[in-house]
Length: 89
Image (cartoon, rainbow, N blue to C red):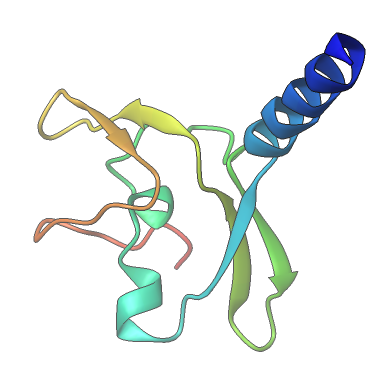
């Protein structure tokens, strides 16, 4: 019985690590995520990837945290602020 519990916990942990959220960067609300801001330090864009770029749909790692170059704070990818600048244009 303990073996099942460990396997379930490992599966949940694995799911949390690779959780990607989808957003439409053409909409105002979807585009203003820190993951798509040029001030959110992700120089290789490893936390975002196109899903259907012609339609504006992109995926981002919902669990990622990187340094904001303006505030010098660790910010989660799903947050936003008033100093947002879109980095994909």
